[in-house]
Image (cartoon, rainbow, N blue to C red; front, side, top):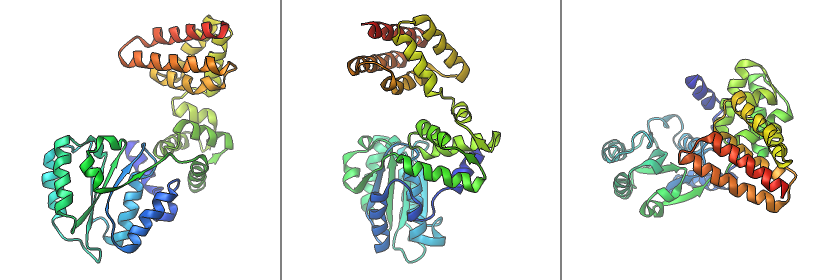
Length: 320
């Protein structure tokens, strides 16, 4: 299933700049670099599944054409994160000349915020010494984990999650090519679950397509192992009305039926708090309590006790 999933992702990966969704300002600047035949080192920062790797591969394909594989080195720094990788693999590739008319090669380091500090220091010197023969594209989730000397050598681009309109375009495109039937409610469910993460979107759609060519909201929530927002709302509403036992039973049923952990359900609760009928001040108190409960779970507290304490707090807030 993992291999098939990667094939799906590769199948719908954009080949040209025009196909890249949701990052128009960044794409326009990168396109200008490629058109000039020259570009600085690049640092792509942002959450997962929003097009950092895709845009890097599009850059390589547009620069080198058919020779892009020979002129591009792609490494995942979370797997190969030591100083030896920079000293051996990267240096060996960087010191050789490119094939074709472009005067430099491309080295793409994915998850570069996982590189050790020593490896980043070695990378800093490599970027200086081999500027004539190669350009680096660094991708990370948190740019703050990249040392300042590397950031100052790069043009930094901060990616943002895809907006709803672009996510819907991606869903429609995949549904048409795969022969899937998908309603507007199902599209909305996919968007709510993925929050603009196209990689997760494609994985969920593939899983749904294996079971049924007609994708319904119920199927989407089931395959994503996420409770329906309406059901979470019912849990909170019951507690806010003072019915602790009913809300507790509904919460436990939700966790058992969908196989949710305490961390999963508290995040869904946090989103749904804003949709229950309470004063804004009380909603803020509940959000604050959510943060406290999540922290305690991360530190190792029993998730059922923490969730029950949260529901008890909702009952108190609702009755005050």
